[in-house]
Amino acid sequence: MKKLSYLFIIVGLCIVGYAVWEIVDTKMQTSNSLAEAQAIVTSPPDKEVYKEEDGTFKPPIGEAVGILHIPRLEADLPIVEGTDPDDLEKGVGHYKGSYYPDENGQIVLSGHRDTVFRKAGELELGDSLEVKLPYGDFEYEIIDTKIVEADDRSIITLQNEKEELILTTCYPFSYVGNAPQRYIIYAKKKNVKIEQTIQLL
Image (tube, rainbow, N blue to C red; front, side, top):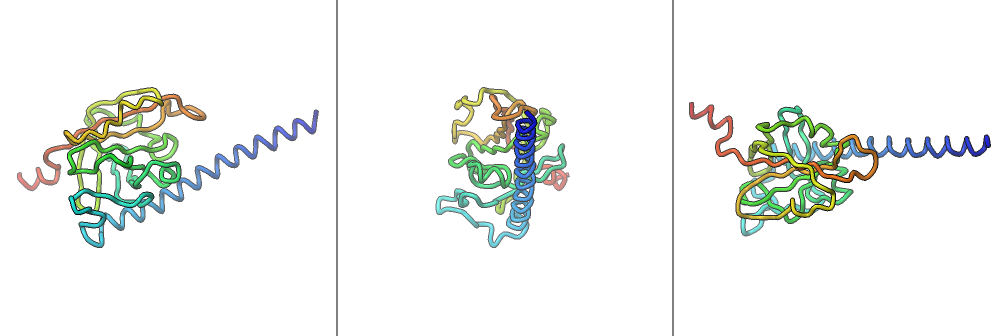
């Protein structure tokens, strides 16, 4: 019985140790991605970096391409192209096939609830979300939130009729293991940025 008890303790410690290592590793990768994103946003090689001939923004998978600034949370989160597990360990993933600002379509950003989006539940309607890219800064206002089942595919429509920003993360936030639901935040683009309004006054 003692040997069995020791075995359970060792297995438990290994599981906890692995979980802690994953959190630390993710934080390190996110920090590295943020440094890369800040560099490309503040001093891009040129404002047309990753621009296709048709004007669309098409960065390579896995690249840090911008910053999601959330004023209420005082957070700067790196935006990484792609939403595979490896991409989400680096920051907020941009869903491949969705649009970017100024492309008149659905922009989809996803992140883990226990890392980059762990405080997403504190956001309120009317809060601002800012997307900073090599070709400009764009501001959005949260207009709605929704909780859906994990297998609900109706959220990501990839429509290109109007510009909208959607953030997605797993839910409940405190759930242990694979969460059964998703928390969705909808935001619309502000027509005039705050700094532009000040200049006009």
